Image (cartoon, each protein chain N blue to C red):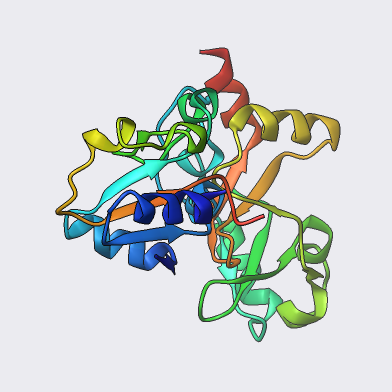
Length: 66
Length: 156
């Protein structure tokens, strides 16, 4: 796992990375990065992550770093 | 919360996991697009034709820019377009030819492009402002959101 900044997010997305917002669904509905899917932290398990492609990078994010 | 999510993904066997620590607050604060149910955002409705000037510029020159525009203000910026000050009506009306640096109000209040137009309109009404300066998180000028534009947009 590595922490990255905005520029790296954009580079990774251009290279095919997947984006996952880990906040609760209501916060995701309000606003999320284009193309992001929602898997809340409390629901991250083998089943919910089955929709992700293990062959591609995954970027997770929440609201901010606080 | 996202570092824990990233480690959890690794524990589930994902081998290339990254944590965007700035999150959506950072993304939106740089004017990058967000999707969702939140209403229109300031960054999408700014006017970019506001006159700007460097600190060294003389008032005479600034007045000429302002007169040629439909604005009554000038934003003082540096070479990186970071907002350093604002020259308002009173300063523009001075009779001398001072520099922008000498007459500007330093460090004007600014808002991020991800702020909603609704919240900004409320702020402009409360503080009796006709516009707000919209900058990215790093201070780079994006433009001004005018109160009349916000009112028109929210009335639609």
